[in-house]
Every structure is written in structure tokens, then in C-alpha cells.
Image (spheres, helix red, strand yellow):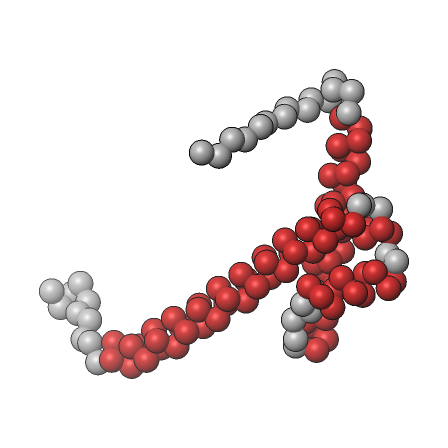
Length: 119
């Protein structure tokens, strides 16, 4: 049995500002990582993997990476890596389906479709 605990933090909660600030910084890191991955892919045609992305952010000491605790930053980078891998896998499977459908298009051209006037 899995137990979960749920915390509702409203604007009137004493720790609201801290949580809001951490969420803001997390969003910034996610968006910046997304930008770097897309830019690298457009320039080289290759995917920027988690290890290379983390290494680049660590060496450049970019503020979006260093403003958060290390574990949090690493987890955000792992999430975006997982999201992009899923996207590329979906893209590959979509392309396979398109190829299969295009093979069937030629056989559909031989079908005679009657207009309303002929019926």
C-alpha cells in the first residue's frame, strides 16, 4: 500500500513566498534547458543528452542551474531529458505509420468513387 501526503499551500501560508520562488526558478531552468536542447538540435541535428547538458550548465555556472539545490536541478534536467526522448520516440513511430499509410495510398487510387449524379 502506498501512502501519500498532500500539502496545500495557499497565498496566505507562511512559506508561500519560498515555494513560489522555487517554482519560478524551476520553471526558468526547465525553459532554459529546453532552449539549449532545441538550439543544439537545430544547429547539429543531434540530441543534447542529459550528461552533456548538465556538464555544460555546471561549467558555465549559469544562474538558472546554480540558483536551485543540486538535486533539484538534476531532477529537472532528468525530466526534460525524459520528455525529449519520449518526443523523439513518438516522432519515429509516427514516421513509420506514415510510411505504412503511404504504401496503401497507391491501392486506394484504383477505387472508383461515384458522384451523387451517377447514383
